[in-house]
Image (cartoon, rainbow, N blue to C red; front, side):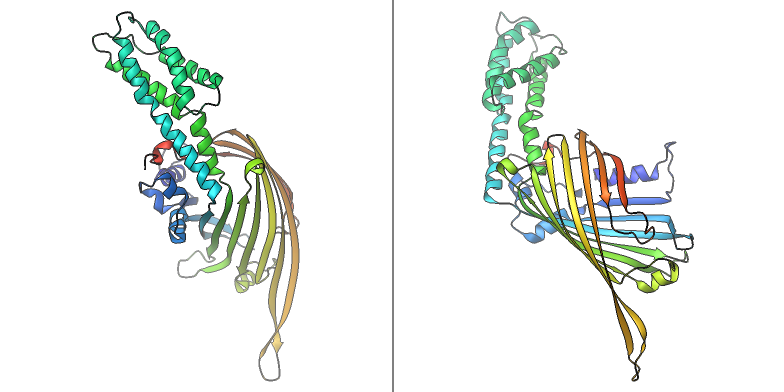
Length: 390
């Protein structure tokens, strides 16, 4: 419920920390993950059921405003609603990589009891009477265990983790030879934290979010407007449905991702002719395009090019038999956009976009894209959300 609670809190609490009803409100929520389903890593990543994937990844969104402006600048109420889900198609190589990470992480879990037993024997030795004596006796042993089970590539990495552990362990209270359990437990907790939050877990976390192979995003969005600001009269002026296949390359090209898009939009022409008399819309449009993105540690870049075909059938009177005659009207458009992202941290992203977008309905002369944004995120999954022992 973290995302849901954060969204509600941020929208209904003002700057004075008082509850307030917002003029504008937005929410996205994934119902399936409101409950812990106790899935193993394989069950989570490689579901054999398309239906299960759809349900697990389904998210619903809505946004409301009391200031949706009509063509004459009248402020009205509007509610946008949306749905999206993602299907993943993991390959054999993907499964093997996940299996290897899981095996190495399970090995790292054995560090806790190994160090716990060693620490117990050390604190009971007659010549270990202080924290300094304990650290001196366990240092080389700890480094060897970390090198063997902690997912380190070399001895230098193991030494760095050992140094970080001792730096934090200096804050521990002195060993009580008559009751050493508290000291041992706290020291082992420090070791466990530094191992499980170290390089191996970070690598696995990064791989899960950037899995190779195919995935497909499916989404729908629409707008419900109340032009007269009364509940008994509403209209749906605009709806969209789109599919976005994505392929992430492997091995030396794993930093590259190829995307495609197919999007269908349809408009309520009667609504637009009545409330936006100066704006011209087509009955439907089809977008199609490609994009490519590259991710390089903290920096990523993406380029996309999308074409649009728009169509309308305009009534042109009736024939001699009384049948309505229509005139077909068509238009084409094209947009290209480049985006450059810099990850300030795991939760903060700085993005700059530049290019030329589609000719918009409400501001037809505004097609230049030049936008700098700063995004904050929180509530991401942790290792406790996945049961590695299953």
